[in-house]
Amino acid sequence: MGLAWQQGPLATKAVGQFLVAQPLPERLLFAESLRRRMRVRFGDQWVADSEDVVLLHEPGRYPVAFFPVADLAEGVLAAETRTTDHRDLGATAWFTVRAGQAQAKHAAWQFTDLPEHAAILRDRVAFAWRAMDAFYEEDERIVGHAADQYHRIDIRRTSRHLVVRDGAQVIAETHHPLALYESGFAPRWYVPREDIKPDALTSVEGQTFCPYKGFAGYYDIGEHKRAAWSYPQAWPEVAPVSDWVSFEPDLVDVYLDDRKLALEPGQTVVPHGIDRDLAPTH
Image (cartoon, rainbow, N blue to C red):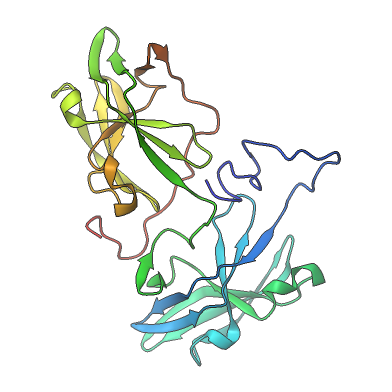
């Protein structure tokens, strides 16, 4: 979860509520300085390099980075005849991005008639994430979307008793699971491989991608499809859960200290595609 997506406070299905007497507008947009150096790579060139990036948080969307026009490489933007109208921010001009022999249509945009209250976005350009080769903070690539400073993951060791059953069959049992707390989500419980019945999990084809944890592989349990998942090589920030397994409580029975868990409303993850040229070995 971030500030404006999934179940964040500015999202359309926020998990919490603002304690105010009068109802807030249906849509709240929030813009802020990133306060990090951010760069954009395309066609083997740096097309943008700035320490003055502004993030736009818009309900239901991942944060978008806006770069000052002055911090773009010369000649990388070619104006298109295409224009659109943003429901909150008005007229939008679109650009083809060109660098060396590479070019990408509809790959950047700029709001050209902003209301005064949105002046922070004036003379700034955003780049389509999938259209560019990569985005960086300093010399490290960032994946998925611009860094959301309101998203957090904490992993905690615990001695609680966790049991996973498929009917009468015990699939897993442990007294030392890991609790993964991720902003806006109910806790997820991860079990070490040695505490799982060896033949209980059937690996299936297909992966999903999380910008914060990495690539997840899935397992069937009996007749229950994709009832468990694991991050075989989780990102370093969440390394403790690497190759541990978590189970879907709506597909198999998961008990924590004898209390049966249930999938809480709003826990379905918004799908996220994999960045261009990002291999699972990244």
